[in-house]
Picture 1: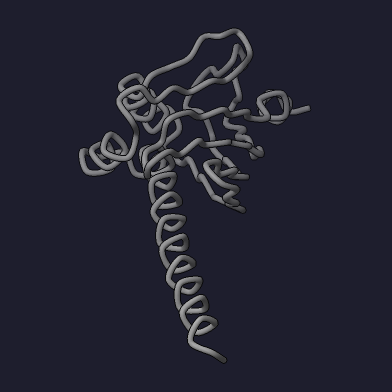
Picture 2: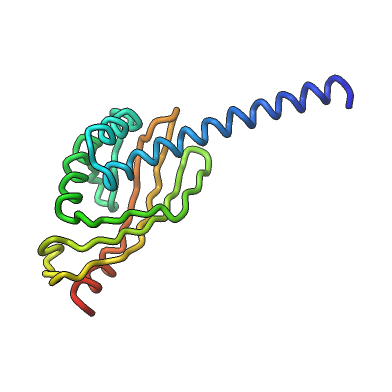
Length: 158
C-alpha cells in the first residue's frame, strides 16, 4: 500500500467512526421519546426536551394538525396513569440518513373506558410504526401510526 492509499484508508476509517458516532447519537435522541412513555419522570422529560428541537412536531395523520413537544409531556403522564401496566417494546430501529424508523409493540390494559369501549379488564397488544426525522442530533419531526383498530377489537372481546 503506497502513502496515498494509506492516507485514504485512514481518512475513510476516520469518517466511518464519525458517522457511526453521529448515528448512535441520533438513536439515543430517538430513545428519549420512548422513555417518556415507559418511565415518565422529571429526568426522562428533561432528556426528551433536550433531544427535541424547539419546533419539534408530531403528526398522526394528514390533517395538517400536529402536536408540539410541550404537549407530549402531559400526554405521556396521562397514558402512564391510565395504563399503568403499559409495556412499550422497540422491536426494530433502522436509520437511513436523517430518518429513524421504529417498529414497536404496545401492550396495556386501560383502567377504564378507552376509545368509547369499556374493556372490562381486557387489554390490547398492538404494533406501532414511527418515523423520526433527526437533524444535527435533534429530533425535528415524528410521523406515527398505531394499530388502534386492533386494540379496539381486542378490548371489545371480538
